[in-house]
Image (tube, helix red, strand yellow):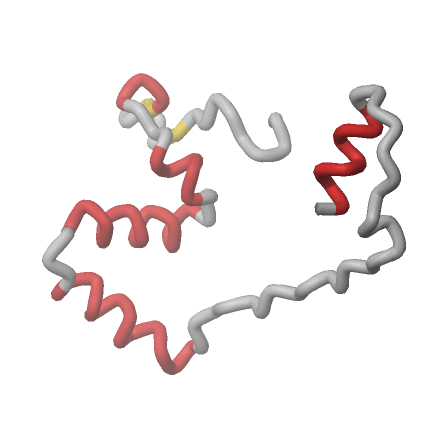
Length: 95
């Protein structure tokens, strides 16, 4: 409600925002990671995964440190197999 009223005010409507004094508590997302002792079981589970395309995506992410969107956007023209390089045309930080 607060965001909608703020948007309407920016558009020129002179409305009193009934939620103006309400503070929104920021939520923190817990980081999820695999502990070293869990890693071999995770890699083994990738071999048993029925969807090997998804498993390959996880392997690629693990081996390269790439972001999911970067890996999903990979195209053959971005790969130089002879040089063993992957050119990522658009990254999160625009580099």
